[in-house]
Amino acid sequence: MSSAPDVVVVGAGAWGTALAGVLAANDRPVALWGRDPAHRQAMREARENRRYLPGLPLPASVTVIDDPASLPASCALAVLATPCQTTREIAIWLRRVAPGLRALICTAKGLELGSHRLIHQVVGEVFGADFPLALLSGPTFAREVAEGRPAAVTLAARDADLGRQLLARFHTPRFRPYLTDDLPGVALGGSVKNVLAIAAGVADGLALGANSRAALITRGLAEMARLGLALGARQETFMGLSGLGDLVLTCTDDQSRNRRFGLALGRGATLTEAEAGVGLVEGATTALSMEAIAAEHGLVMPISAEVARIVRGDTVPAAAVAALMAREPASEFTLP
Image 1 (cartoon, helix red, strand yellow):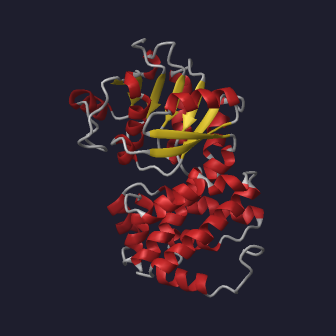
Image 2 (cartoon, one colour; image 1 turned 180 degrees about the vertical axis):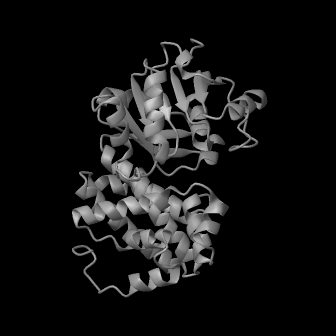
């Protein structure tokens, strides 16, 4: 076995570190890079990501690096595990410092604010439309993956050979990927679920009960599919791991930052207080992008629209719920 890594994970947060551990299964060498030099040094010294995954040692075959430009020629694959709104910036930097890359996997979930681009569209604009690209998404919390608990995800790649290579590279006894070529569907599932998780958190913060949560998840899934079909995705993708699976996970478990943000709002916190208590909330910016896309395509997406109004400060949780319940009755499957 060669000691040179064949993959670099860009982003040393919880998810990047967890994926580095997956890729390091069976002592396979993996490089891990984060933008904070002090954090990189701390991980090297402790052999642990104490900032994001305390108590979980890094596998011995994971090397924390300072400069992707120093990677060997054998390292032709990068996993981009950075927040959605930094994707373009990191992609531009990565293309400059690591020209030997031959394929890229994106894990960010969201829509780029301003352009409203999906993640693979953003990366395609930087690396070129023909650059081999894949998305990884699904119902996963980083700590559970890093602990070695069983998990399953969707890998989306249009190039069949790349898809098969990635299936083999990510598959371990505790991590099972499934393949699709529906990049828009996988990208949208991971994006929209964050918005709906805010809504679910709001409902639970208001103590509306299990009935309301179930209804919200179901009608939210209908909105997700409605937007996806308008943007060229396939209906079945939203019934899979990167759609329904991730939606249920994020709406029902308090490990989700988006859900906790909504919970705080539902319990009376201000927007500033809720965000300060949770940190990065991708669903808040995604809601605004979704609102613009829905208007562009003439789509009715009432739950997502109310989340956008909440995060913009145009309404409060109780009023948003009242507005949803006051909508005219309609057929479940033929009208929004």
